[in-house]
Image (cartoon, rainbow, N blue to C red; front, top):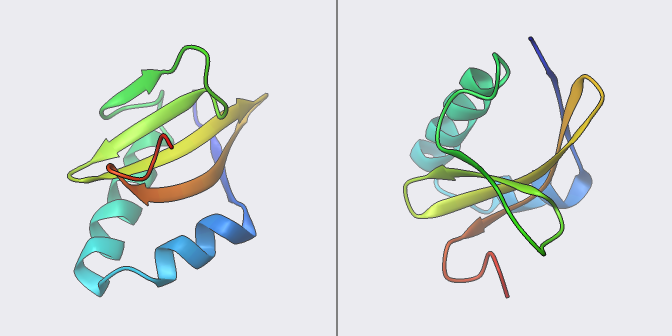
Amino acid sequence: MRYEVVLKPKAIKDLKKLEPTTQTRILEKVELMQDNLQGDVKHLTNFTPEYRLRVGDYRILFELEEEAIVIYWIKHRSKAYS
């Protein structure tokens, strides 16, 4: 299944704060995730948003809404779950 990616304003702001090489790596992994959630994707328990994608030291926190991946935050792993 192919998903559409929707970035919330906070996710765009988080992405713009990162170095260009890190931005590129994250966007490449998000693009791969569009096809059947490929990559290091994990369903989180007792946490909202419900899913995370791991890209090195960064976590992309998202939810699935029908045929869309809605990305809420892009955070360093030390700040992602607090």
